[in-house]
Structure formats: C-alpha cells, structure tokens
Image (cartoon, rainbow, N blue to C red; front, side):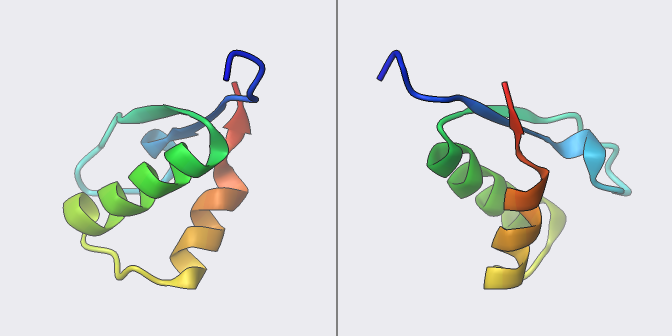
Length: 62
C-alpha cells in the first residue's frame, strides 16, 4: 500500500453556500467514495454516475 498513488479532493474547488473546506486524501477509490458521500449527505447532491464523474475529474495527485 505504501507505493499506492494518493489522490486528493478539495471541497473548496466546488462553489457552495456552506463555504466547505473539507480536504480528502487517499487512494483514488477511497477519495471518490468519501467525496461522493460527502456531496450527497452534506451538500444535497443526488448520487449519480454524473456526480461521480464530475468529482473524479477534479481529483488531483497528492
């Protein structure tokens, strides 16, 4: 696992009324899973393949 590539998602990159500052880092799949859950539970987005693809496109190598 030490050689796994790490990725990050920064909620500040998404416009939001909440001014959320959450930063998530880990493997690509871990970050995507948590970021989608956060977007749905905290920001009211509908879970969909489109949302997953949007978030995945914003992941950055850490």
